[in-house]
Length: 246
Ligand code: CAA
Image (cartoon, rainbow, N blue to C red; front, side, top):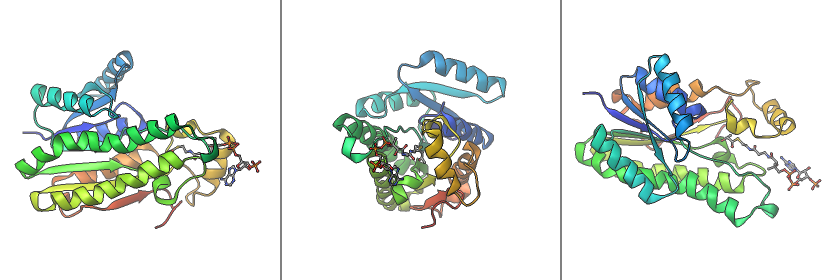
């Protein structure tokens, strides 16, 4: 029977490529979208079907523990137990620290860091009990090096890898791997929100000379979710065109 994968933010830029890569790997894939955007999710699902990718779509607010609990309850009842979780959903609210509001600090921490706990907590015990699981957390180069104008996002994304390392130790004896992928600047809506001039300055500092594509990240996610990847755990994969070498 095919293993079941949940990709949070599955209808977004990196999320879409990740869902496609996991479908190609033979997984039964569930994409979550932000609660409220039902029409957008339905259109996305149709576009995927047109390319022969069968993906179920479910709404969730990953910043809410109960919302995540309800989501996993529904997925488990409708499709089955979750074997693979890709914590991909995230957001930015960029501003310099001197101007950052409490709301913008909390919004990013609640989604980008607490969301990883809220989701993983629902599926981790089941993975341990069944003796197999894959969790991949999408962090960021800016969690590794910090970024001007992103104190909230850099803090949340750095926290994600601490979570990965702790959970990896708890899963190791039970066939459950937990890894981080830290993408650099990828051509998605999130990076396009950065002012053109600032973005060009950032791209000028990327050794390969351009931003990455969602597929650059999705290929690595699928690699880590492979049945044969059981010896890789607690790692942080930098995929950033050489922008930051730790
Ligand atoms: N280093 C040092 N100083 C800098 C600077 C830098 N990188 N960038 C701007 N400054 C200086 C300016 O020269 C200016 O100086 P003065 O006050 O002396 O004139 C000052 O900082 C401007 O400060 P402000 O608080 O007014 O900042 P702003 O409102 O102009 O810009 C910002 C704030 C919009 C957040 C801008 O800094 C920015 O866009 N930063 C980039 C954020 C970014 O990279 N986001 C990534 C989004 S994509 C993503 O996150 C995905 C992923 O994982 C990679």
